[in-house]
Each structure stands twice: as C-alpha cells, then as structure tokens.
Length: 180
Image (cartoon, helix red, strand yellow):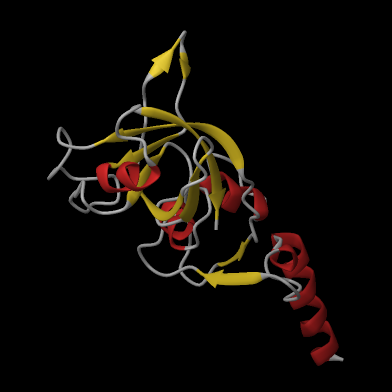
C-alpha cells in the first residue's frame, strides 16, 4: 500500500508541477537537460532556434528567465521557410571588426549577416537575376538600413559571397533565402 501511495504522490506532483509536458513523450522530440551556466539564449543558439521558439515549446513566458540545472526542455523541430528579399554586401568598413558571434569579420570569407535567423544556421542564397547561389553561415547581425521606416534588405553578404553571386557591381540584388 505504501508503494502505491508513494507512486501516486510522485505522479501527482509531476502533473501538478508540469513535468509531464516537458519531454513527456520522447517520440519525435529532442530533450535538453539544462546545465549550470545555461540561458535561454545559449540553448537556443546551440540548437539553431530562436529564444521565443524555445520558450513557446516549453510553455514559458517572456519573464521566465531562471533555469535550473537538471531541468528538461523540449527542443522544437523548427522548419525554416524560404523567402525572397533583397541583399546588399558589406566589406572594407567592417573588415577586422568583431561580428555578433564573437569572431572577427573577414570580408574574404563566405558568410552572411541576418537580423533574426539564428547565428550558425546555414542558408542558401540565390541571386534571382542570374540564378547563381552560395551556401553560407549566418555569423553576424544586419542589415539595418531602412527605407520609409522599414528594413529594406533581408541579408548582408560578405564581399566574397557578393562576388560569387554577382552582387558587387549592382550593390543590392533580389535573392531567395533558403535556410538549410
């Protein structure tokens, strides 16, 4: 009888505290066990998702910032969608400066800057005017140029990426962005 009562208390406490919703069914779900020093942003970056996606998958609000070591989190399987936009390139003025990921920007490397896609995510950028495409990693944030109060470009290409796509001369090109 004691074993049954104890088991009932354990199951009841799991239901009350919400543990049944976090990695409760392991079918098609990736679970992550929080380590000391982890944050929502660090975990999201590590799994190439956005912090709001991680919060939503775990029923967390914006103010839920405290994580406990040993806590289990569901890592959502995010399907990024392709979309069209405009791309510009950035080079000499930023060469040698620190990027958002902490590394030093080298304009001769094939990389891109994006305002919202997770750092480290690989993307295919296709020039819609000549069909040339590259695969690059999102390592920086930007572009931040606005026209009529709205961002008018989706992605910034390194000099090397822009050269391969044929974007140096026009400066701004129409592209398709496909997260991989």
